[in-house]
Image (tube, rainbow, N blue to C red):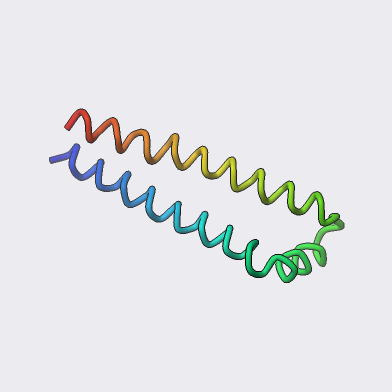
Length: 80
């Protein structure tokens, strides 16, 4: 019972985090100029650094989603 609840929690964490990642990527894909204008008002940043920071951040976030949500879900699915 506890393994089932924990496994389901990891699954929902994975789904929610992937939704956040897709939302972030969608903003950069469809409203990149607006997001850059918003960020450049607060920080003195070039377009190239803006792209690098966001794409590195998305990569880092994706790796952590897989490592801390998907891998435990798979391990609990195998164990349970």
